[in-house]
Amino acid sequence: MSNHLGQIYSTTKNAEKYIVLNSQNVELSGNVKLTNGNLDVSQNLIFNNFSVTDKINFRENSGSTSYNIINNSLTANNDASFNNVDICGNLKVNGQTQNSKVFMRLNTATPQTGNIAEQTITNWTPIISNPANLYQSSINIFSPPRNGYYSVNFQTSLKATTGNAANAIIRLYQTVLNEPEEIVSEAEEREANEQTMTTKFRFLNINIILFINTTDTLRFAIQGDNNYEMPASPYTNLSIHNVD
Image 1 (tube, rainbow, N blue to C red):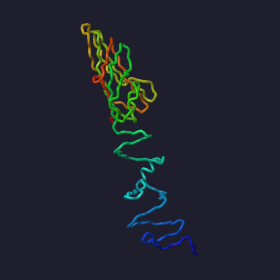
Image 2: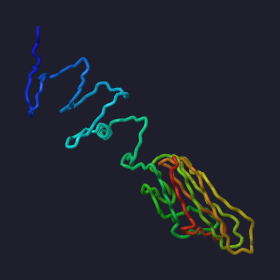
Image 3: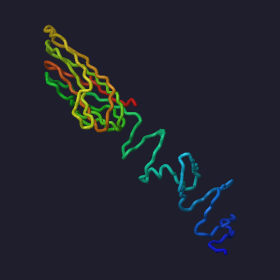
């Protein structure tokens, strides 16, 4: 007994010969091989089972609308897992560009003075920032675009205008994931009092590699005796760049 659930017929469309299977569903239990020509799907192409070892090649032809399986899938709130990703341009995560290279350089615009008590360096001036807006404030000098290892280089000279100045310190503080702030690096110079000298200059430098989270904060502090002065650029410079 046969059931006529469909119809097979021949026709011509746009001067090309067609064989039409007029049925609601067509099930092929074997393999389908196209030795020459194209597979034109007017609606959806659905894979019930797809192995990660399988490959699908998509070729875009000029004048045709092509479906880019990678772009359309990743922008449709779908999950994706990749073993290796090589990005030649920029990667945006939640609208923020994740550059492969990060570099920031700061100077002090005007001299900063003090006397004995430690104080935060407040007069930073961003000179170079790539990507933009890495500098936040004097108590959060660097906002990394991603978690990673960064090289922090700070150098300055301290000038004391009285002869008995004996102490000069610069400190780098870091707050990690809402933990208490701690000193991660310090440069210090101490010497005996020299009453005959009216002016002294000390060169201090911090060079350290830190793992910095996007939620961390960094702060530089400076301390010296007897009316010290930290000069403005070019003697005081700070640069930060990623090393991973």
